[in-house]
Image (cartoon, rainbow, N blue to C red; front, side, top):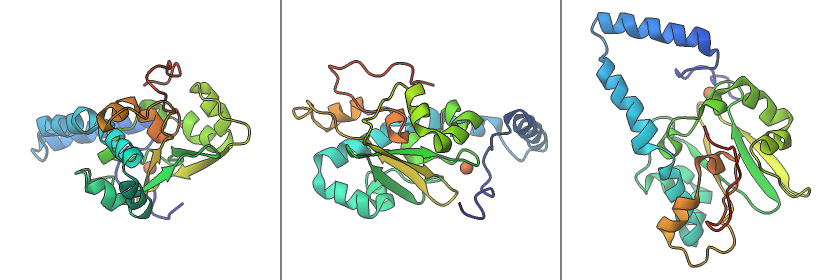
Length: 214
Ligand code: FE
């Protein structure tokens, strides 16, 4: 946990109070002509739909098909991700954490909602919830069960606490039976939640775990 974790200017989770404050502030700033609500809408739309988790999925797919890229991602995720054109605010210092049969990685921001915008877009509501933030650390297997994920008993779970400085991208395991797929087809299998660590990636012939959206 870093000292200035709480000092990075994005919405924290006291949402009712924070929502009111943000709305009041936005109204005042708009009335005084400091901000343009249309520009804010463009910014939100950019991260919600244009950037979004597809960027991260393409990073994952590249790492699955290109061992040199995977090595680069391990050594310097910020540079490897930026090389695909994904960089910018809330993603300046990225770390990629790889799942293996023995180790499952899961990302949380225990204090607020730090999240890697350039690769995953805006965080889902549950990521910002007090319940997820508290339970991810205390009872990660219970959280995974809620998301329909059951890991082998022997698998270790490692929780990564995002901060203002460091944002994590989980590289899920490539599912068996996908040897014939190309990079774009592989990327299509990679869900947002699998890159946070609350889902696994399944081959297209298998049904995905239920109840893991929103
Ligand atoms: Fe945060």
